[in-house]
Image (cartoon, rainbow, N blue to C red):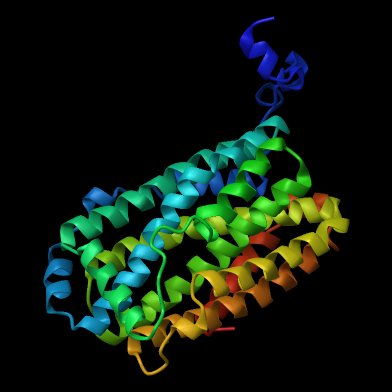
Length: 329
């Protein structure tokens, strides 16, 4: 027995009869529909023009800068987190033999990395100084008697997301569901979707940063596919394992409470500050998304597995959730 054989379980070996592609791909399934859309929707951050964004940033007042910086940096760090943590989910589904889902997730991983590239390129081309802006935020917090720990290792992207995603590599449905609720439903479906809504409000009020606006429009199309897949994945598991519903809904509530207490605690925000008011509004949007997504999960537990795979229930759910996030439903 080699050293590798001693580490790798014999259960990971594939039998000739287990190959999926010779039998054909399930092209009508949700993952394959998303795969086709991802192939057609490729874009390159390097093609975007940020020259006006630099001029707009230099002309902004400090409060507007703080609002834009908080959102942009939060998105960039979040995209880095999901880029680093997507692989275990692919591994878990690979061990289940779900070829179509792994195929789609290969585009998912590339797109998350592309989003990191976009935000870092925007920071570089616009001349936003991360250290300078963070120092302003730290000093403002200290003036209110609040200390910000810049070296913390507990939080949504520091510990919760990596822990949940690495457990998904086991291939266990309960752990994959936990990962998808954490990653797709909360991080993407609640945090990112609420952030997009705030971006729209900022752009609508100030009409600035065209390069950032265009990049976010393209990212939102990518993320729409990502969240749709996550809703499909939760639906698929809950339809076949409805006893896991309490685990899924409790996890959403737990993540909401953890995020509010660690990332954006209300007691650290000044309601008289326009930039802090943006964060308070963000908290409200996230809470509303948690409530709506809980209902989607509850509905999934009453669906049939066959219905989930080819129906448009995931796409329809995400359409309605996105509409609600913008005040349209």
